[in-house]
Image (tube, rainbow, N blue to C red; front, side, top):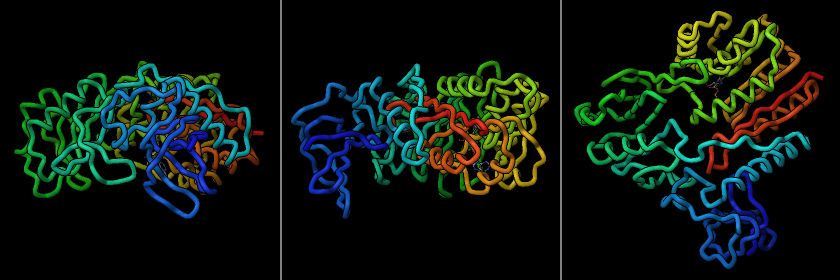
Length: 403
Ligand SMILES: C[S@@+](CC[C@H](N)C(=O)[O-])C[C@H]1O[C@@H](n2cnc3c(N)ncnc32)[C@H](O)[C@@H]1O
């Protein structure tokens, strides 16, 4: 069969006998023989068993785990083509769900398409690795090309020196100056299983349920973004790609084009990063975030960076917006993958600010929300940013102007 195009999860698409076939590791124009992995009434999922002709955009995956591991989807695809694919994907989704054409810009590339991740969660069951695609079988790994050398060295130390009985997950987070390792364990785990001599200068925590116990170092990381220092607690959200994050925030700043007199809402603000970065260009910022630990981090970040024109509220965005009297000139929203819920959309429409900057890690839910907002807002532009190279994921910054 011949692969016609690619779907939004990085799989090749072909048609046989009126059914769609989604083929892993297959690129447009390739002619392949496949093995069916799953069959439903209207579609099938398959993997390639033989190539009759390969695309000139195919490269040899530099990762030995690529075909099994569920982490990356596009390691077989030339990086420039990955960027073109991501633009096309965003164009198709905004067309399909929001009926929009001609608003999507070229993807802002990742300066460092390997070794960019500052956070990883390894699954453990005696072996340590990542889940296979769409399964909870673990693929054992000795390293990951998306991580830094230091993080991969930490993985080797944990694998070779530690008894991983009763460990469920290992999270490693890294900043430019710190590293934090969290062992998510069950009740029979003994802290003496941790060979502390291997973790010199590294913060080590044990997590049982929702409780964290500090074994060495701190219960947080700090990271510098532009001229600001941010504290990040182990479970607070922080973008996984530092240089991508700076490009993303730079894009937000350019899109906002503030004059200095604006009042700004920073919704789904996490540790306050976007609000703090834009605070020097505006009169006042109000950040809203549901996760209490992240709000404590945001307040610490405000103090540490000597910012006086930002406040944070902890709670659900829609519920707080319903009560607030804050009258913004611009609203920045950066929701989780699920996008905005109906109350948040309703309240945003009631507030009717002149400008909304929608930052999204899922162009499908973003496009759905743009459709809900279309009675009051016109989409001026959408700028995709490649924060997650070699995966099908793409971040977007969308500028909406009140009509
Ligand atoms: C994609 S992150 C964005 C964080 C931040 N803007 C940044 O760039 O680091 C989404 C954030 O929304 C928060 N969140 C999820 N649901 C929420 C809700 N209903 N109301 C407020 N915040 C919410 C999450 O805890 C998370 O911190």
